[in-house]
Every structure is written in structure tokens, then in C-alpha cells.
Length: 573
Image 1 (spheres, helix red, strand yellow):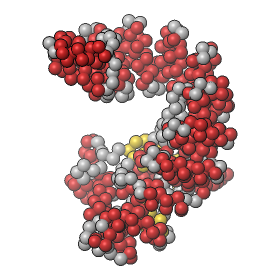
Image 2: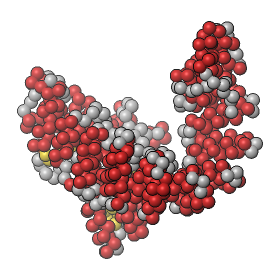
Image 3: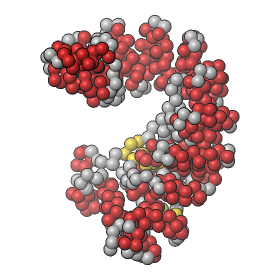
Image 4: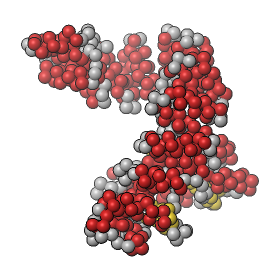
């Protein structure tokens, strides 16, 4: 079980209580890192001991030397219980979107062996803020600490308040002033930013001392009359509220972790000095890879430099991530080169993205070879990509076979893609069946297409249900399509409501249709506002419709400036 939540949400305590309630007789094995996890699994297998593996801060175990897909499969086979926690921030970094499942679209992703592991898990989300029912039950306890938290937590979560996160964060920032503790604040800032680079703690005093000076200078330097280093360290490591300190002690008296609440709530850019220090202290290609993952979106120049160093050491994940970075920058030849390098090293995601890159360049035969290579390596996404490629080439039977292979492998996108293929072939009953299958798996595009299919068959009530299901899943096109359906049925008030919903989500077609609907109801000012919103969103029909409206309300001169530049009035539906 993986519990994901914000810092101080209570993830570790929740896992502890689950362990105590469900597995009280099991021994707890808590590996310090990936290599230790490998050893632990081997020992548990050899001894058949009743053990639960405890992985607090799961990211420390992710990677080719630790928890990767093959080891996860082995853990499942051996039925070893695992309790793991991960902060939202780290989960988002490591579990980026999946590899492209459409041959014409490459989803940028930061994939590692760990990302492939996280895609196979169904995490339990632990909310920072408790529900009214949870607060009510907490009020029934006789624990004075919880009673105090209920009375004073304000906008913060109860566990967050109990862990003193907000209080320590505010105290840290208040320290950066004359008469405060500016050097301590700078030491903490250095530790926070080193953590944000992905450099693993603990951090020695000498390291923090060497990094903190630019932070102190930026805050005011000597004008703040900074305290001596030993005084600053004592203040930064002092335990507060009976809970924790800002710099957290380790077994090494000269090295510290940083309170992760401070890390997760800091959003300023990481300065180059911190990145450079992290690069100097990273050990081995895996640590370089982790730094690159953290820099990938916010500091792409640094990420490229880090990835290239890891590539030189033969890290296939770094080759793949570098390919994504170069592709996003439009450097396609370089991206192709490193994708080839990663594919030759056996990286199946790289084989998929190489195929996507080749397909975009019109090199379809080479793309097919790359997709088939990925399929042989067990990559489900490649089956979908190959099906899409074959479908575009008119090889429908082969495309169908590839999609069905992906469906059997449990890929929900494949059912959607097969539905599209079957629909184009006029096999509507079969298309409906696989759309239903994809919709049940939560595929919102399939819900929309199913609704369209049902509407065309005159099954309007079923279509409405499918569109509403897609709306609940957050699909703006569904609200637009439902608006069209309701408008044709003469249910104009309901149509207006869902058009508003789609327009607020940025759907320009909904803005146009809403404008037309309002104009037909004589609500010209509102209609104009909606059409102008669509014009700003770049909808090609909006200009013409706005011109027509202005003409109708007697503003002919304004209308004439618009009408010649546009096409035909959009017909709702």
C-alpha cells in the first residue's frame, strides 16, 4: 500500500496504525535505500519470515538499483506486504504522464524505472484537511493536543498543525531580520534548496556553511548583523513545540536532514549556486539522474547537463529523459540519437518515444520497427501506438489485432482507440462495446465518443448519461456535446448551463454556441460577451457570428469590420 499526501498530513502515522491493526505479528523491515530493499526481499524469500517492508519516503528506493518493475513483480509473487509513503511533491516528480499512446502525439514525461513502478500502483490519497466527519470524531477524543488543534488549526490540517509545520515555516521566515537569526535562516534556506535539487540528505555542516552565504547576502548581509555559525546552528536545530526542528538531527552529529514541510512549501526558483553544489556532491549516475528529474521542468539547461553526465556513465533512464528534453526543445535529431542509444540499452519507453518521433517525421517503416521492438520488450503503450500507425496506413486488420492485444494486456487507451477504428469502419455495435469497456475503466474520451455514437443512433437518454459521466470526469468537450444534445431537444436552459460550464473550462466552441443560444433568446449583451470571449480564444466562427449579432442589433458599421474576415455561421451541432 502506498499512501500519498502532503508533508505532515499524517502518512506515516496512518501506515503505522494500519500495520498495528492488520499485521501485528509481522516483523518490520525498513531498508535505508534501494540496494538494501533488494537484500531485504532476498532474505525474506530465503527465510520465509513473516515480514512487512516499510518504505517511508518511497522515492529513496526508486530506481534501477532498487524498486523497479521486476522487483515489484517479485514482491507481489512472494506476497510480501509493503507499506510505503510519498509526499505529493515527490510523487508528481517521479510519476509524470505516461509514454505517448498515440503515434501522432508525444507526451513529455520524466520516466525512470521508478515512474514505471508508480504507474502500476493505486495510491491511497491522504488529504491534508480533514472532513467534517473526521473533525467530529476527533472532537470526541480526550487527547488535549487534538482538542487544542481543533480549536486553533485555522486553515491548516489537524496533523499539519500538530506537526508544527505552519509555525516552523513562519518562524523561519521571521528570523531573516536584524535582531533575528539571519544566518540560521540562510542555513535552513540552503538545506531546503539542496533538498529541492534532489540531492539526498543528510547535509553536513561544512556543506551548509559553504552554500548559505549567498542567501545571507541576498537578505541583507552584514546589515542584518548575522549571528555566529555555532549560534545559528543551535537555533536551526532546536526542537520546537515538542515536535521537531527545522534542521533535523541524524545519527551523524555533524549532518542534518531538513524538515520536509519547509521544502514542500518553498516555491522560489532554486539558485544556480545550489544546483552547482548539488552537482558537485552527487555520487554516481543514479544520483545524477535524480537531480535531472528534479531540474527537468524548472531548470532544463541544468537538467540537460546532468543527464549528459549520467548518459556518459551509461544510465539508460538519463538517455530517455534527455531525449524528452531535447524533443521539447525542438532538437529532434539529437533526441532521436539519444532515444536510439537508450533503446539499444533496452529502455522500452525509449523505443516507444523513438517510434513516435519517427512517425511524426513521416518515417513510418522505421517507426513500426521501433514499436514492434518495444512490444517484444513488454511495452503495452507500444501496442496502442502501433495500432494507431497501422490504422493510419490503412492496415485495419493489423491495427485491430494490435489494439486487441493491448486490451488483453489491460490498456484502457487501447479500447478507446479500437472504438475509433471500429467506428470509422462502420462497425458501430462493436465500437459501442469497446467504448463501454474503456468508459468503465475511467477513459473520459471514450465516454464522450460513446455519447456521440449513441446520439447518432437516436438513443438520446443513454447519450446524455454518457456525456454527464464524462463531465464528472472533468472533460470539457463532454459539456459542449451535451449542450448540443440538449439544444436539439429544446432543453435550452439546461443547454445554457452546460455551455457555461464548458466555456469556463476554455472550450471556444461552447462560447460560440452559448452566444448563439443567448442571441436567439434576445439576450444580446450576454451573447456579445460570449462571442467576444470566443474571438479572444481564436475560434474561427466566432468573428462571423459576432458580426451577425452586431448587425442584428443595429451596429452595422462595427459588423462590417468583422463580416468580410470570417467564414460561415456555426450551426449548433
